[in-house]
Length: 152
Image: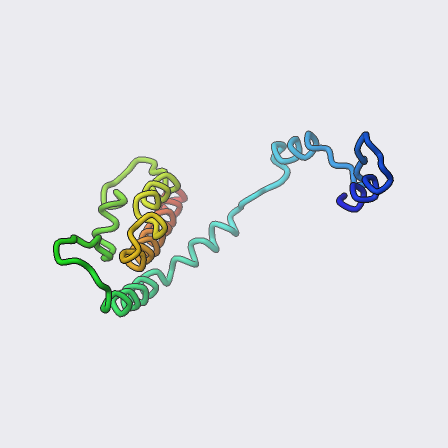
């Protein structure tokens, strides 16, 4: 399509070049909404559940790396540092309270808005990165549990 536009501009055509590959947006939208195309199926859900099997080992490795990384972290004595332990972060996320139908995307966005490494002071960026990793792992695990609970 880009080649067609370049050739048309070199020829000096003012009305715009027609692409050589036709694309009908409405037929594509109709096909997607028809139900004949499956975007995610049981195989995707099964793979998602399998990936969560090693979560405890991932958490342990993440927290060990975090403790090593943060051992030399500078901070001011009057400054209260945000916690990196999973229980505290789960409390901040609201994952410790049962919810009827939690919106995990909203929970993730709200946490990222307040805690993303790009939004904190430079000396807290390493800690914020670890907090985001732990929060993402907790949210993913909660999604897996919700998906497994919904299938029962």
